[in-house]
Figure 1 (cartoon, rainbow, N blue to C red):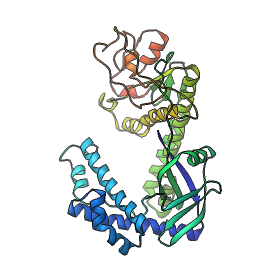
Figure 2: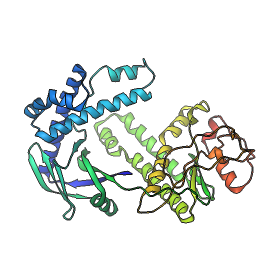
Figure 3: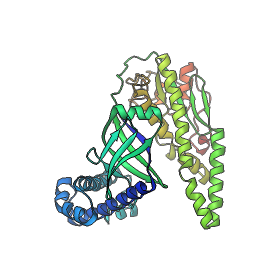
Figure 4: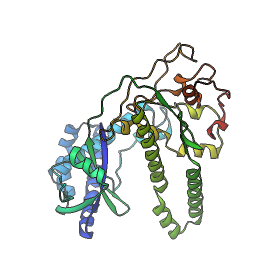
Length: 391
């Protein structure tokens, strides 16, 4: 399995200026390579490199390896665009967004992240420093810091290139670590049902309730402050808005981390699997008002499943996964196989909670997992309308 570790660089002012100039030069070169690729219609790395390699080195001050990584970044960007088009992520064929994305070359922000491989970037883990190539020469002895557990993972498992990221005057290196996932467990002793919601972020069949009341107040307060600052339209308001960026996102991610860690720990300790509620198609189940759409779309439910998946596979806290259990013959929809809900690799298995429902529960019932765990029948039918979101 692959994990991403982020460390914070602590450069001096001169070093920070060199890093910023490097990102600007690399992204200007990437813009030029992107235009050439779009005009000529060449999107393979070797073919595009033959066309732009000399120009990138002579015109933008890049040495050999950074020029190669810049070409690869452009090729990867076009590959991602084609994948999004095929998957329909940019809208149906003929939509304005899709046509606009395909009608012009991909552009790169001056401060966009730049990948560095081991020829351009070396790590000194004992001294907590890095040596990195820049357009002003190689910088040595740049200190970095991070969470101790992540630094240990970085020193032991790092593999491949790392991205240099500049954000709000701060500098980070984002590195990829490859860790061997724990083996499968084909026979969990039981299942922990996890029901996801908005009022209650997660409710398990053991009766553990991870309430979202405080989080809801926090998010509403953030929304009001954003609206107030946006209405002022002053320089001071814009600066405050910029400082507030991503704070709610980081808070939500931190909350999902805590919830998933506790659920995985319970499942590991008791040797059980995790049955996660299937939220597929929830937006099509009813017509929503504006405030309900905002509540539904701003909380990262999918991220909670992703956190459950990778935490279950980490060797630091061994846990297991398995294939889903066979649905009961008398359960609704038992005649046809039910689709399992990935995140793949969550402890034991992440299965559609509806497959564990007792006979009286309607398919897709949000509380079916808890009822199945307790061995009782559902007394309240699942509401298909917008009121079902406020649970």
